[in-house]
Image (cartoon, rainbow, N blue to C red; front, side, top):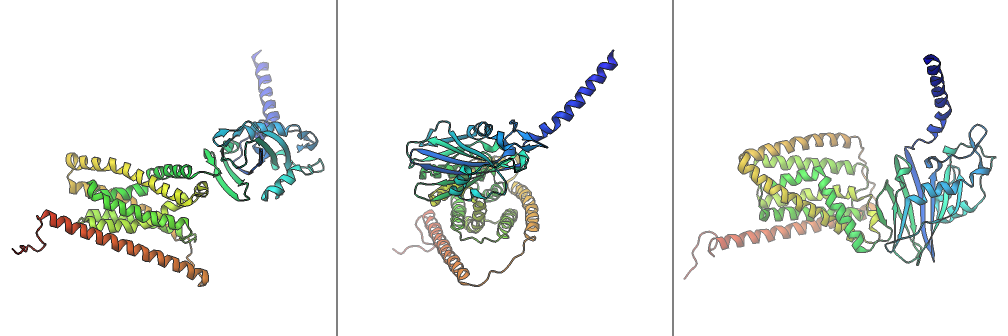
Length: 456
């Protein structure tokens, strides 16, 4: 009795695998999904044009004909349900902070991958409203695109809009390319991966500043190389009074190159980012070795921190390259906000490092021995980074720029920035020298330097 039951069970299991294997494979999560969208407020309504691969519409059984080709005569009634399930339900649109109601699906259609109508808003809208594909076209369901028009009721097209996209669930890696068409005719392009949270399409200055303050704060805490460089700065000087000019010089320097890079003063060559990453590793090694050798003074250290800060500023700019799109029309405000966030992160790190090092050198190990041990560990890490990044840098071929009017204009701008930096460095050095002499005079009881007694 048991043998026939086992045979029937095995046969049923095999038949289920054979029959439902194609269906299960058809509903696998796609690896890479690209979403194209146009966002345009017009009068009392907002139109959102969206294009996604139909393969991302899982848990929807599309009608087929013949050997698995899409049946375009029956698919029209199913597309709105797929749009509501996978697109409209994954988008939250806000007008002046108030969430808009669920949209109406005005149009939806299937398009071939070769279609280029989403290059412009007008072309995409005309295509979606145009003739539909017929059964004369033989194509399977996971090789086509789904285009749709969503409409939201709004109070004014001059309001401030924001969007929270949860389309990341469409694929393992979802990239959304969104173009915001303002009533004035300007186009602002956004490109983000996954779920970026609430994106202000036309942010006010304080919204942009707050976003970049948070970004700068988190970046300095996540940047291991910047933290190690900061550790090297702190080890010999564990008093906040001595650290103020050093950290300030580092902050001013990286702010200068960060802003310069955002305004396209930095080289655009492919070898420039790996060069900067290599120099950052070199700065860590140098600072660690200087701590081991000893003899670092505040006057020398702040100048070195300023020089290496210029390099680290370019490193910060690489992290901002993909997020400056969220600054709107407040580029400078966002850059300053990012610098403020970096400074706040540095202060938090210093508030932890200074007492931790003080406790370590008083209770655990002697100051000189502890300085050598910590700096050696940092130098070891930085050395490996430097070797690995230098190997990456060698893969790029350096090409001398062509000498023309554009290159000369760029060289002139760089020269002007260099002269400005030299002037700031000279002024800061003179101010610190005067301050040191004044403190020395005050500490000697008003006596002139050199030990001479004032005449009576």
